[in-house]
Length: 343
Image 1 (cartoon, rainbow, N blue to C red):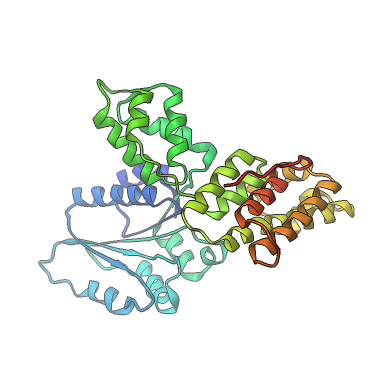
Image 2 (image 1 turned 135 degrees about the vertical axis):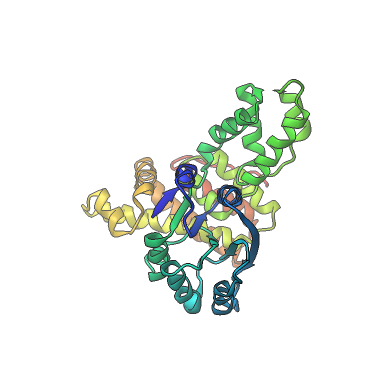
């Protein structure tokens, strides 16, 4: 069965399954879900634990076959396999399908992987895990959800705080939940009488922000230029290649232009987005972005994308990161003239 992470504790209370599959984009939350399964297993006598990482040449057949050869007096065992790519390969897919249909006795199997795309979730092995095991899905914490997530974690740590504290933490650790939790743990040790002040936070919290190109594209599409500029600066500091950043923004430009052209020809917006295979949970964001643009701003955005492409590739003079900032502004701030500062 497929189970959201917040229902895991309830399921564990009813009894352990033989196979768990934990997936999600947030390593911290995936790890916490696995910790809950381990804890429940230890309470039921699972004293041993083996852990593997299934890379390209992982011996699925040999590893899983060994689970059936436990001696009569062997203790219960937890076997964990991390699937870094989310794709076990042909041998792994067959092994996993067999495993869930006939799990070895006295063994708890925990498989973990990143967020899986639609094609992978539709595969035979994934469907087998969902049908005969427990598939725990860990939700992503988006930027607009981060302050609430931090506030809940601070309260769970027994800390009191002002709203400003949450904002400071969110701005410094955005994109890195592990860093956020580490800082909350540190504050729990430093805070006098459990009270977190702004001074304590500013002195103790390191800049743990970590961004990716998708966050930049999402911020521009959501018309949040201030955040887009901050993410872009973070990407530059982290040494992300400018062509990769260009690809992420240009992809959204192409989608917006395609949608605009389709709607301009009379196609209803909802159908245009469905035809473009835009996920339902993203359609409202694209819809708001399209409403903020007009024909002139769409043309300006396309021209800016072409100019940025030439600058980034060295075919035109200019500073690549300044050009990328201007392009993000053309997506996020239609109709506004941008004076691009040096970043």
